[in-house]
Image (cartoon, rainbow, N blue to C red; front, side, top):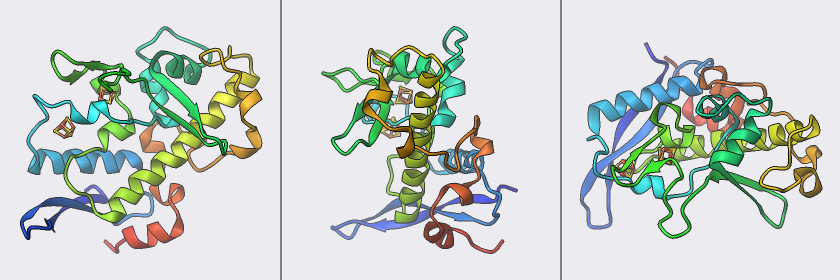
Amino acid sequence: MNSVKIISLPVIDDLGLESLGCDIIITDDNATVADLLTALDEFAGQYLADCKGCDGCCRERAPLIAADIPALASLLPPNDFPAHAVCEAFGELTISKNGATDICFKRDPNSGACCLLDTSNKCCTAHPCRAFVCRSHFCIPRSDILSQLREEIVNTGENELTRLLLAEEANGAAPLNGQKLSALLSPVDYPPNPQSGKKAYQEIIIKETVTPSLWQQIKKEG
Ligand code: SF4
Ligand code: SF4
C-alpha cells in the first residue's frame, strides 16, 4: 500500500460554497517523490476529470528540477552533459539580482505556451517525460502543507539542477545559451543537497528533502 495518501479536503469559498480540495498524509519515513506522484495520480483518477480541452497550466511558469533531467534527456541525442542539453533545448535560465536561479520550461513570449505543448491539440508532446511540477499540478485548491511540500521539492531540485549545470560547465560543457554560468554564479552558493545524485523520483526520500518542521506536519503514524 502506498505510504503517501492524497485525501479530499472540502474547501469553502468566500460565498460559502463548498468545493473539492486536497491534502496529504504520509505514513512512512522512506516515502519517496515517486510515491507522492503515484498518490496524486490515484487521487486524480478517483476525483478529477481528465484535462482534455484545457492547456491552462501549460502556459504558466513550470520550473525544472534535477530529477527531471534523465527523462527529458531521453528525448534528445545522447550527450555527455545532459543537464546542459535539456536546459539548452527546453529550458530558460534566469538569475535574479540576489543570484538566485530559476530554470523553467521555455515559453512562447506571446501566448506563454510551454515549448513542449502542442497548442492545436492542447496536449503535452512529452507527456511520459514531463517534469515533476507538471505531474504534481491539479487545478483544485491544495492544503498549505501540500503546497509547501511541492514548493520545497521544487526549490531543492532547482538548486541541485543549478549545481549540476555548474559542475557540467567545470567539466567542459559549452556555455548555456551562450552564458558562462561560472561568471555569474558561485558553486559555493549551490552545495550538494538531499536531491544530489538522485536521477529518478523514486530515489528522492521526502523526509530528507523537506524542512523538519514541514515533515512533522505531514508525517502521521500508519
Ligand atoms: S490541470 Fe487544470 S489547468 Fe491544467 S490542463 Fe488540466 S484542467 Fe487545465
Ligand atoms: S512539459 Fe508538457 S505538461 Fe509540462 S508544462 Fe510543458 S507541455 Fe505542459
